[in-house]
Image 1 (cartoon, chains in turn blue, cyan):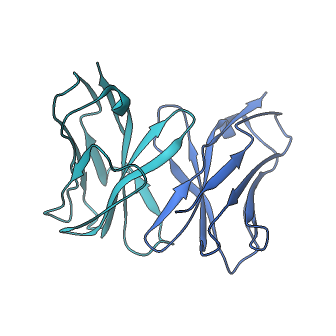
Image 2 (cartoon, rainbow over the protein chains, first blue to last red):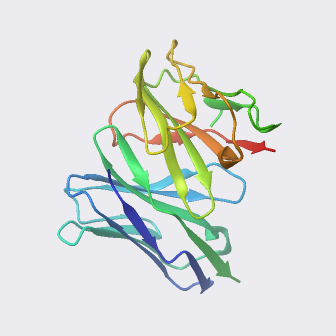
Length: 110
Length: 113
């Protein structure tokens, strides 16, 4: 099955700075790459996703890039705010299911 | 989202006991999933279902049983609970194909003593 690796496991940034989270995947057939945000004690929520036929996607302060050749994709958060503090999970998959990375705990320091 | 509900929210039980976690969705989504979340492992898929009466194994199915007699319900049963199954369990649903949004329930925190 798919193996998704995510780095770093923890990340601290000053408010207003950018944050970057990187993931790699193993299965070249994977064609869908969602990102989820999970606040403490809450459910994971989809924040952005990208399909394999697209190299980059933006939604306000959030962007995701995909390099199919290298099999890696990244989440970029610009102008970080304290409410961005959460655990972020990448995922990769094809067919019926996707597989999650192990998560990045992001802390935005006011 | 109120459309997917898990019960109970918290459960404490003992090793060897059977426990069933419930998941109910009101959207008539075709796909339903069960994940477990453990520190250092992220979210791992236990079982999923593409439709009523169709279930399939995920990454970590051992020790779990699922059924889906109705589209809206997808219970997860631990037939003989072990301490290693202490975890937070999330149910999720999706309307159809992989690229459709997948919605999660609030989770069940299960402790096995």
